[in-house]
Image (cartoon, rainbow, N blue to C red):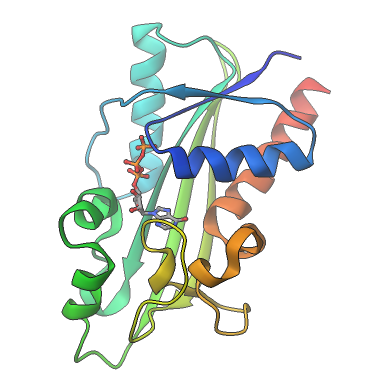
Length: 188
Ligand code: ITT
């Protein structure tokens, strides 16, 4: 089958996705590109529009996919949500903890949306979600908001403390699980 291409400017996302695909013996190529991301409320809207733009520009041969993810914090009205990348660059984990310093409700959700362009006629939109909580301080390594997100069911560890075991709990792990099932049903 043709190699699957993943279009992202974020090397951490690519590394995680490569690791997940490798387990299923599927090769994924990194197309390191920054593309126009429309701003909308729902991540699924964003990925679908991004995929359509890439198709229109004829820049990348299918099969390819794009992924958009975000951290939605309940006491902040879902902030930073679709603005997660910008907010992380501007205020980081520490800024989020500062905004939440007096908050009792620490619940949050990470969402990953993928638009998979299988060929010129078929686009699949897939979503993975994980509920969790924001601790009082940063713990562990990782990237982005990893040190301040504790997924439910992981014994209170943050993504940053889970290392590669993060994939079992993460929004991206869930979305990619569904994506791999689609790829296997279409191409094998
Ligand atoms: P591309 O759009 O080029 O793929 P990006 O980094 O801009 O890369 P997003 O728009 O999806 O990607 O931004 C989501 C941001 O949310 C990301 O930059 C991180 O700061 C954060 N984020 C998403 N998933 C994460 C994860 O698994 N762990 C930690 N932070 C995450």
